[in-house]
Amino acid sequence: MTNGVSFAQDILPLFTQTDIDHMQGMGVLLNSYSYMSVPDNANAVYQQVSTQQMPPPPPEGEGPWSDAKVGTFKSWMDGGFQP
Image (cartoon, rainbow, N blue to C red; front, side, top):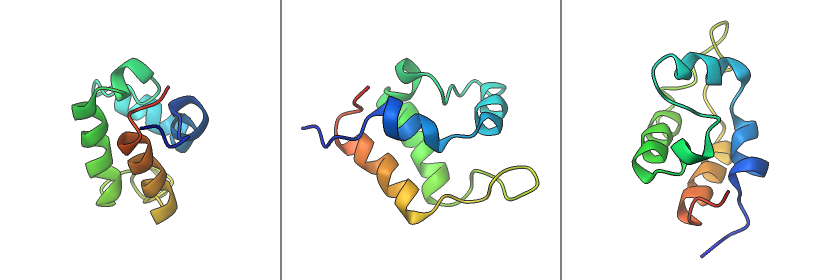
């Protein structure tokens, strides 16, 4: 069941270019729908952001996500990983 949360409109904008570049070096493709829509990959990212382990605090990153951002990511997962 879809909930109106999409990767292109709602999820991709949550990641900064720094996040994307940093994680790409570790094989995590935050800006790739085909990568992020794999449930295991999305869940791994969700675990990091929901426990505030990522993104790192300034100056390396923008700091932990707000509850609203984490909730949007979870809603996208629960809604079936809409593109």
